Image: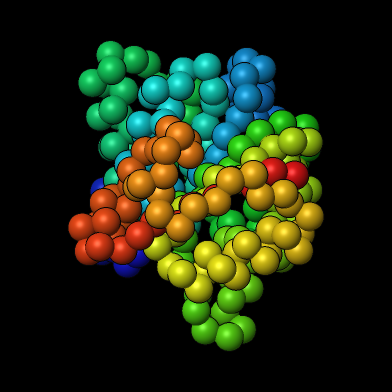
Amino acid sequence: MRIRFKPWARPELEASKFYIDNPEEQKGKWRELFKNNNLIHIELGCGKGGFISQLAVYNPDTNYIAIDLVDAMLGLAKRKIESEYKMANREIDNIYITRYDIERINNILSKEDGIERIYINFCNPWPRGKHRKKRLTHTRQLEKYKEFLKEGAKVYFKTDDDDLFKDSIHYFEESGFTIEKMTYDLENEVDFWDNIETEHEKMFKEQGIKIKALIANI
């Protein structure tokens, strides 16, 4: 998603207590940062934060890390998180956001961090030839995730893109993941998971586009 530059984003992020500007220094130390032994879930490409803000505020006994590469997105995510926690009358104590290139994610996470779940929601489908290796579900990326995911960890994936979904099924299987559940129509699936709609998801549904989703474990 393209978004206009927001001059306020960087100053607000730098002043925020739940923004991490140096995530490489936290590799293997995220549990220490959260100051508890709760499970850690991450969202790759958190965008404006609509998904992760609701997920984190509803699940106080789980820790969350939200990653994106664009300051403007993270600035909006910061404000969304603050809004959700304020409405819930809760202190922001189980989520951190950080700016980082997901292609280099192994520089900020390790087995010691005990990452138990990854969420990937409506990532860039990169439909053209050589660019497909940039997909967050590409085999190359999945192999990187395996380096820090704990045994039995799961990846939750949603997309509107038919080709990306079809190819991703192959990527997961090729990387040794087991697909637990899969659907080509999430809206009409019963008991698939406790779904939180993203901004993209609502938009696609209004356009009559079915949402594809899967859960894979390693």
